[in-house]
Image (cartoon, rainbow, N blue to C red; front, side, top):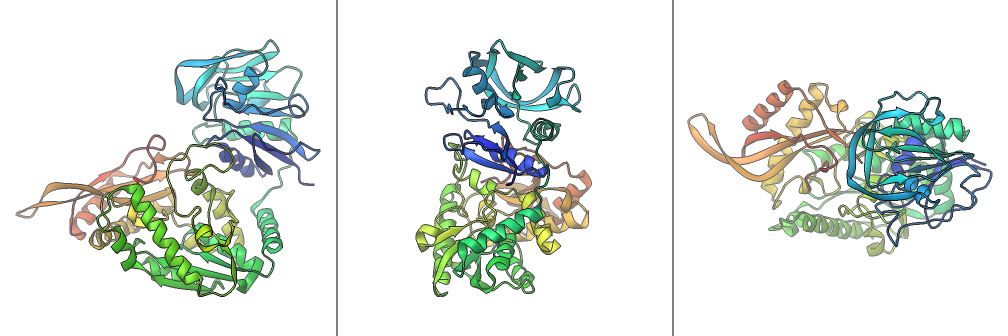
Length: 509
């Protein structure tokens, strides 16, 4: 029986990041809603309580029955989880005088504390809470503090139970992975034997068991996610997998033909569909970003459905959905707040009356890449930056027209090509050009121009849940600005976006 860590989800957008970090440590874990989790058996080595958008003081706040967990097996409460352990056991949690959000540094750390073994005294941590622990129960002991948060971490005497008010799972907590490793290995005794190879083996076996001899249709995009999903399905069911690639006119320059060629020697059955005119017609005059997403999603569903019906006896729809798609579209394992809609999640199964299979639904992008590498996926596909489902439609602020798309495709090709030529492409997580609904005065030769502004965007990240703007060399930015302005008719000004996520998003719409 596979030994594991259980993660109880209270609706935090970071919950799956906890799982992702544990998988980085080659530790197997399973995530369950706080109100529906299995009774721990001998295979469960520890339990982690996630954060939450709720306050423990709210009437409707999640309050799980931890009987059989607390005091019996190692337990780690993170943010809300820590405050819950205090609140339910006689301590006091109150609203902070000011929201404790963003970077902080540890000050006090208890000497010899096993949870902080190997972590420097002033290590950076990431706070994200509106409540704080004011008074702890008598048998709780503070083991770490920051300048603003006295009880940043605590241990419950007589138990292997811990609580921390910061988020070790996010990128900005510098030694967060070490803290989690201390918990799952030293305190829980977990074996570190979960690997991409073990994921592939178990996923293929699960797909074969679930799908049998049924036919499956998959929408390919040319990106890493759908390509890896396609390879997994192909290994599981072979020729019973049928792939469709829809060109909605919002792809990058020459992408349709290049993507189709890249799949030629992968053994996949792929049908390409040119539907550009349909999408442009339906997007005419539309400026609201959410409405654009819905139109693109609706048209994609209809085109895909029409093409899929040409295949007889299809029973399943496969999607390359990964966790950031899910968490930013709708809550999966708790009451997370919806940030934006996304046409890659949902919609198609209802329209097509097909059952859905999503082999990558629990993985983050970097995990997908590792799985793809283990499957032998081409480097040109593995290394591609993430690209939004609605394509350039959400990188054109305002109305989408063929002329604007052509302009943006040229600018994006210059920018992407420049990143590769300068050796910067693999150093950023995602990059793209945004065409703004702003015109500015310029001078070219002896002529006055009044043309569009383009914004360059590049971020560094490991999971897309948080991201920093990439510190690209000024010389590179100057070169890109000059080349775009000189070569792309209609653009006379280039700016660079230096916003991080949060509070901004990676894409502009």
